[in-house]
Image 1 (cartoon, rainbow, N blue to C red):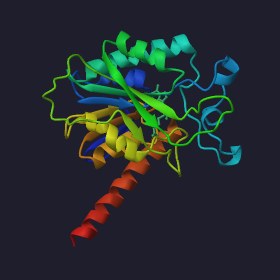
Image 2 (cartoon, helix red, strand yellow):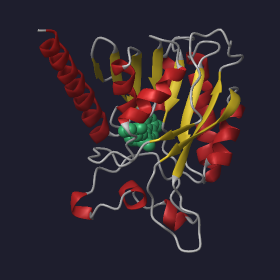
Image 3 (spheres, rainbow, N blue to C red):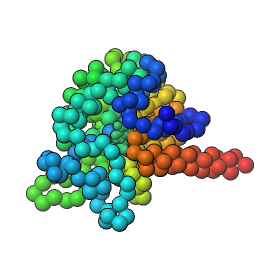
Length: 253
Ligand SMILES: C[S@@+](CC[C@H](N)C(=O)[O-])C[C@H]1O[C@@H](n2cnc3c(N)ncnc32)[C@H](O)[C@@H]1O
């Protein structure tokens, strides 16, 4: 399989549905991911728009690359989620936490898929994006959610402290991925994993979770199917970690 990486990280270029079956059982200490939501409307004509049309307000000339896997209807998306989540669970250690980003539309379906796949659903964390488009006579759609759970019982003795239930971070200013998550947010969310553990992100996009993991002292494996984002993700993680290393060297001199 085509892959790239460094000392504590790698990104695999492929389809999660296939790649995930190749991992040894009990390889990972946490599953933390932001899958394609297949959201962005109720009607097929709305859902079947490109990802940049659905999730970005940039003008078409400056649009970021579109990504794959975002056009399934409700039933097929839920079935597909349950399938890879089931294989991912086998690749995770007993007690490993799972965190899944999602919007309000797909929230009911993702909690079904998680449980069908055999994970214990434990709750939901709010990501307050701080800003959003005002809508007359309606509440703002200002939050996304992190549905979380564990692979069987999750011992209280794990060396992980108390974590918040709400995180407040604005969307990244200079995104390289249409639905890129804020790096500071990911640096907080991954702390659900045991210190130094190995984190799997099967939909790693521009590599935000992978980068956050290595910056916080974890190991990380990402999977990405879209050619453009596989390349962008690998370059971004490599460049950011090299820059961090250089600034640590300079500070140490
Ligand atoms: C919501 S985005 C993740 C963005 C990421 N959190 C970031 O900050 O850059 C989902 C990603 O999953 C990828 N994807 C979709 N279907 C996939 C599949 N079957 N296997 C692997 N990656 C897939 C898409 O190409 C997209 O980049």
